[in-house]
Every structure is written in C-alpha cells, then in structure tokens.
Length: 189
Image (cartoon, rainbow, N blue to C red; front, top):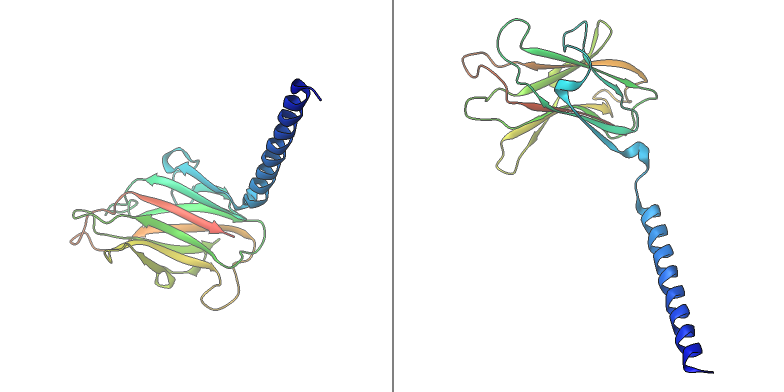
C-alpha cells in the first residue's frame, strides 16, 4: 500500500468519523429541542389589533400550547377609561396544568400601583383579581400578578373558548397616579 493510499484511507476514515459525529449532534439537537407548540411568542403591545377597550380588546389570538407575551404595554393611569385595559385570547382546548394569565411589571418610586388581572367570558366574571397570585423579585418587591387557568382555584381547568383579560389599576390616585409599563403574559400549556 502506497503512502498516498494510506493517507487517503486515514482521511476518509476521519471524514467518516466527523460526519457521524455531526449527524449524531444534529439528531441530539433535534431530540432535545422543545416542540414548536411550546414556543414563546412575543409581540409589541402597541402594535397588536384592538384599542384595549371592553368592546374592542387587544387581541392576543390563539394561546393554546404556547406562551404569548405582549411587551411594553403603556401604564394604566387614574381616571375614567384609563384605569383598565382589556385583552382577548382564545383556547382551542381546555388549559393544562400549569397555565396562567396576568402581568409582569417593575414598581417604581413614582409608579407604585400594581397591575391587577381579572378574567371574564362574555358578560360573566370568572375570576376577580383577588384570585391572583403575586410574584416577587429577590428584594421582596412585587413584580407580577397572575390568575391560574389550570388548576382553577375551585378545581378543574379553564375550558376551551375566548376570554377577556382585564388589567386594571386598583390603588387610589393618592398612592400613585399610574402603574409602570408592563408586559401581559398568557401561558397555556
């Protein structure tokens, strides 16, 4: 066997090993990747359809099997028509455990009023803000409030359908005139 034959043999063997490693790595990456339905979709709150009123809520669309985040939502302020903003979303099947909807925010010295969620379907309120679960940062300051969609406080899960998420400023104007900017989060696993 000549030197050229031996060198080509080693190179083709190495190329085969490298190709096998690349195929194995690609297959591993494909297996480890989460399903597309579990993806997080992020949108600019100010570019979504809808005015945010009761009769024309901001549309988050179908949230089944995914997390939808509307970022950079303008603050809610004191005064009629400004202390509430409505968002709609659709579940094409019942929510699975764990699923939730609400808002994340960062309280500030001049904006100390939290964003509080409630959930309705049609004219019926399903969950008031008192059912909300607070989240806190490491310093112990509230940074979110969410309603459970599955499991519900009384048991079961939210059935398929279209819902309206009302985000509201509850504190009196004496404490704070507005909420901070916030993100709306609906995670329906």
